[in-house]
Image (cartoon, rainbow, N blue to C red; front, top):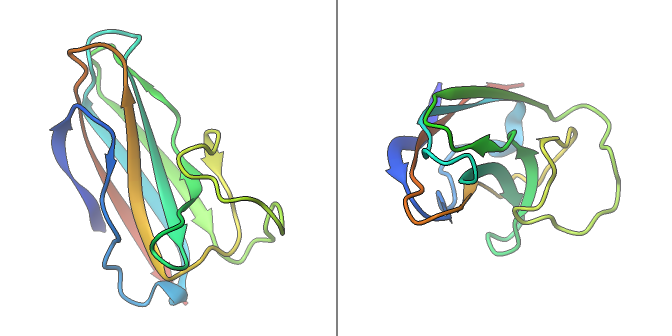
Length: 139
């Protein structure tokens, strides 16, 4: 298991930066695990988490979007399974930077760079403690 984002309390939107996963081009399957250990107290506070890919490290495209986490103080866990060798759902699409609906876009993705991005929205006292890890299978 590879830790992509260490567990920490976060109060604002950000990203992990480009992830140093060696030989991304050989990744065939990845199981991504979102572990929310503490959620904001108000149900109107939200956390959206995305796994993204990029050819150039500038333009990012979502290929995993976890189910939105609502603030209610409770712990939540989600798993997303991505398969490179499945037929792509669309051969042509505009990049989707933190806009993909909850789900996984199966099929090949650029292997230059990957990152985790998150969007935290809501009131003043919004805080989510979470980590992201991945189980990566090659060839």
